[in-house]
Length: 222
Ligand code: ADP
Ligand code: MG
Image (cartoon, rainbow, N blue to C red; front, side, top):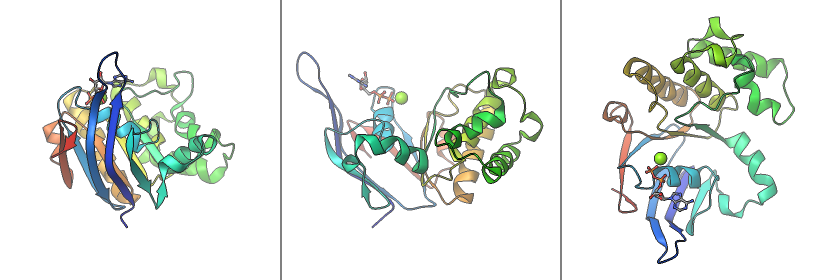
């Protein structure tokens, strides 16, 4: 069985009238080391799909399996630690803590579970080096440029070497040079860590670098 399997995902939002069906039978299967770009017009349900894939939301029906675990079956109390260990997120906005250094921001997922040790600090430093920020490690994130902050966010998403890396318009707030750099880093790290990457993007250029591309249209992947 593939490492990531989404089967017949349906998502409806309640409205005063008919429920709004945003996902209408989405299917996707990916193995470790594979990457997928998701494109589609604004409002087509791309973020909704990524949230469901990342256990931040639940489908109305259908299933998501990661490493053979059915994510809908996980108990609410286990979700946060499952997510922390297995899934990395990069959003359009970096969501760094401004008062913490770049290094401390990268370590947040480790600190969250109380296990910071020399190995994780070394790992965080090597990720920051990889994203070209070895000379910015002690800068507070408030002191970094937009492109630098997003590169810190990428390093943070990879600190636990997640099985699944989800990126929602990760380059949407960046100028072209920085967008290119961040997109390339996501793909490089994904390959290095043998992670599954699903990335929502409006950039044809970025989507063109992915092994697979799908368009979300009328609630389905085409
Ligand atoms: P995209 O990321 O492709 O722009 P979204 O997944 O954010 O699209 O949203 C898809 C549609 O679902 C939009 O029309 C949005 O208004 C609607 N939607 C998203 N979340 C909710 C919600 N919690 N309640 C009601 N409607 C929602
Ligand atoms: Mg969106």
